Length: 420
Image (cartoon, rainbow, N blue to C red; front, side, top):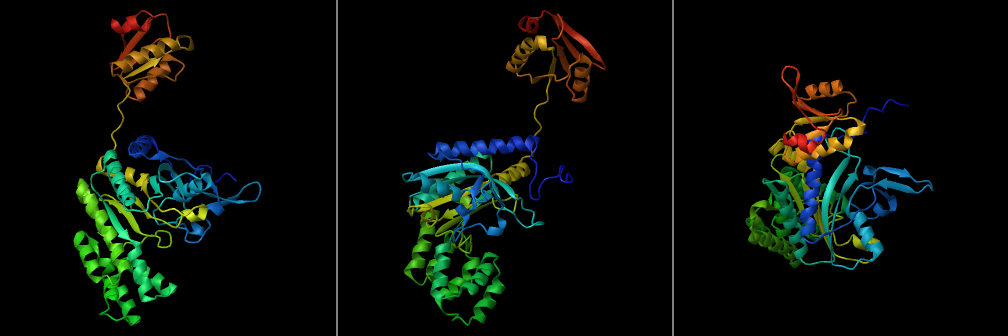
């Protein structure tokens, strides 16, 4: 019954020391950037009812959810997503839109083993609810760029896609659900050969503009020239409108001076049933996995009440930590320079002395050892060169010089002692 007591569950890990400190700092810096841009914080429970995520077009596959029962026999899940619980909050509390919300927390998804993906992930993100114009997409992208800049990332790209374009193509070609699933995989994986063979097997007219656009879709990534090409092949107003929205967003973000952080990928396909328009995906040069994802999801809110347009994105904190460690390996914290030994009767004096050292920029800590000899041993093992003993009638400072030597001895007042 105890065989797993020293192990972590599959897909989880412990975060220690410098990495833990770095991760906490990143979360806080992202949080501060979003709050400074007018987002209000929300937190939702780690445990949610299964029903919150059980609806058509949900973005999380059921087999990826961690399920269990409460004491009433109701099915619960560990939160596999942050956006859906926020939609529940907005719908159940009747918040008045427009809303700009931010969050940070862990999500849990049971990924297949051997994929290299963790099952517990930390996300910090934003949601803009009740805004149907492209200001929402622009605000999301700019907020993400400024947040990534603030944590120290410089080499990254945010790709802009448009699922509405793909949906328009599928609708015009009258594809079956089975054929669409095959087609989606070819485009998402940028399988040019597979896509060409698929179109030949379906005997589509190769001269048809929509077929030509579909054939080019996996290759339509880059800058404004990609948008120009897509517009030249758009067969109807719906397609042109979808492409124009991408152009407007791209050009606006470029005018703001962030053009080098963005690119277009019209062959990018996220969860098609969940997203309804422009989508985002961000990558850093140092790692292959995405550091952010999101987009417009105008049909989610109606599952929890009023139908409201919405746009959002999530930043993958663990991936950002990984990138920053690749760019700048975290340096060790400044070592402790002075270790203060004390008795319980002199702990007040020890704390006052520590505060004086800290004020002077000397990293100092109190010893956890009960005897002076143990404190000396601990100091040697951790390369601390000075020990101050406050446990006796006088304060004594020792320094290591092949052995511990008394350097200074003075009154019990730490202020007088430090001034000597």
